[in-house]
Image (cartoon, rainbow, N blue to C red; front, top):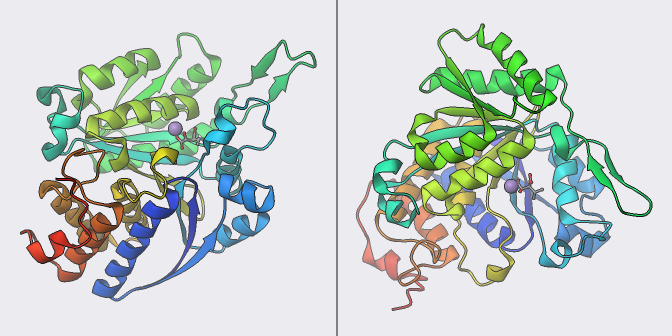
Length: 371
Ligand code: IPM
Ligand code: MN
């Protein structure tokens, strides 16, 4: 298979984790005989520094002409504490989502047995946790009309949804639910918000077409509690843009580290793959960030190309590094490996098609164990 991948390294730890994913994709290409062509593009604080624009037109063109986009992370502290900043890195990502109509953000959440001690939750609550959040990504309060009165004493953000916006992401979520445990939970605030009542109505109608799927409805405040109290109850969670943003960060603690979680943003054409973590500026350039969120996003990219065996090989390699203690500092503050070393170990596992066993020669290569 011959595919074009746009690469946006982005800000903070984005470049170093994304470089591991490129290595991993190359290892997959070697083992399975594919060709991936990469074109680099810029976005976020990196693009503001270089061009003054968080999403230059060339980036949009490069992305549109590619089969998929691999993206690192966005954000820089110099903009976070300046509410008057006119250009912000995040505008780049939001505009790209809108331009490419990436209407569904898919975030799988699972608890790795070897990492359960890292989660703030008790082990018994983590058993059987394996769900997937479908977050609507191009509508709602993120994209509604924004106003700030002239005297700056009043501000508003409008939240609106149209029926087609709800339908397209809901169909996708139902289709996934059919292939999984056939349970879908709509998370909303229908006791208060008009938009949520429309979501409920549309989802109820669509549910009639997916008779195998059990649907339940949960208010977002209760969902936030249930994700901690009884996360194993969820299979597919469907929700609007901002609720999805919040509950997916919350759900990430179940896996033991935010650094592990991948995501895919899909629309009608080119899809985008990125770890759910942010740019983690304190770690940038130190080769200590966890590359697995990005590498698992590359696995989702392979699935998107229908290269399922290849995606499985990546996941197997990731599981092997975790099970054998080849982990980054966020997972083990004492005995840990560098971003690059973990990337190399994942590649090595893929290329050799091994199914386990620690090889001391490679384990010591690039090792950054503190003790
Ligand atoms: C995410 C991020 C973005 C969002 C930011 C960077 C705009 O938090 O992808 O979840 O809020 O959607
Ligand atoms: Mn977020």
